[in-house]
Amino acid sequence: MSGMSMGDVLIPGETLPLIPYQSQDLARLIESFRQQQASGTLQLEVEVQTGKYWQRVLMWYKGEITYGGNKLIDRGELVRTLVQKFKPEYAQSIEGWLIQQLVYPHSSRELLTFLVQRQVLTWEQIDTWAQGQVVFALEQAIGFPGKYRFVPQTEVDFYHGADGCGLNWQQLMMTVNTRQQYWSKITNLIPSIAAVPLPPTPAMLAKIAEAAIEQHSRKWFDGQRTIVDIATALERDPLQVARSYAQWAQMGWMHCQKPIDVVVEPQAPAELPIVLSVDDSPIVQTRIKRALSDHCEVLLANDAMSALHLLARQPVDLLLLDVTMPGIDGIELCQTLRRMSKFTQLPIVMLTAKDKSYDRALAEMVGATEYLTKPLNDEKLVAIVNQYTKGGHIQ
Image (tube, rainbow, N blue to C red; front, side, top):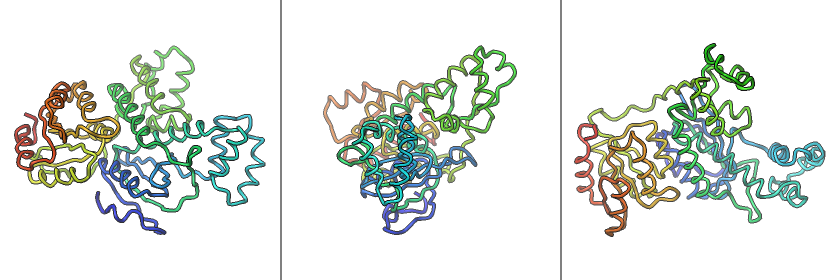
């Protein structure tokens, strides 16, 4: 990552300046916070298109994510938001109590525990809401370049459940991956999560049969707001909004503008092929990049979700894919890619520590082009890459 090292991100008492990162770097950055058991707030400026930024935050407690959203949320706002969502009839009655409690240094955890004990809220409701907020923040940040700052101190000590832990990372990523597949199914109509609905033309408005949809189009489709901007203002799930818009687009009621791609660091010379390596092991990734750096441009992703985001934005000439990864594994990712017309001819080389005939047969069944076993032989890896790429073009 440009201008940073992992050892610099968690200095107690120090607030780091905003540091730029590329689209493929954020997943590794998040993994570093998990490994270092960080507590604090990760502030992101996500550049979703040239000149347009989303502000997102991810809050951490001992290496686990506890909250995500558009902004840092304080104790009072947290309690008010949860009560308004799940028990709106209590919103007015708890206000006096909450004002009194905020005078004292009660933690968010203590306030929420009190409300759970009084059966105003449940931990399941709190966790479900928090998980949804984190999923939205992750899918709106991963896959885009931007800048970040980590603040070790945080006002909200917000953690979950009776055992007082953070959200389950594997479950979060499985949810994000599943949602990414739904997003990919509507890309012909909704080209991106950052797509901008254009103002409706008179011809479009004439086709709309429902007054509520026409009113919505006139109010929200201004050529400036993204789908996420609209969903946030409506307090709705962006994916649900996008799926509704996809139906409207299919009926000819609306049209979305594709975001203007962000200009990133200069790419490698055009004659070099681009290889994407997907592996959750930093050691393996380092070795692959070192072995191939003289022969091609190497992009890195440490899980299937970040790989899908990157593939949606960056053409590659060859994919190196680890079989065993958390969440969606290499077999499932390979199978998913082969179902997409744009990736049917992409050379996919599976990497695994297993060397059994069954594993090779399974890789072939899902569409793998080649199968290499770990530990990797550098010369053999280079030979495979040269075999399936030539002058930066797929053979």
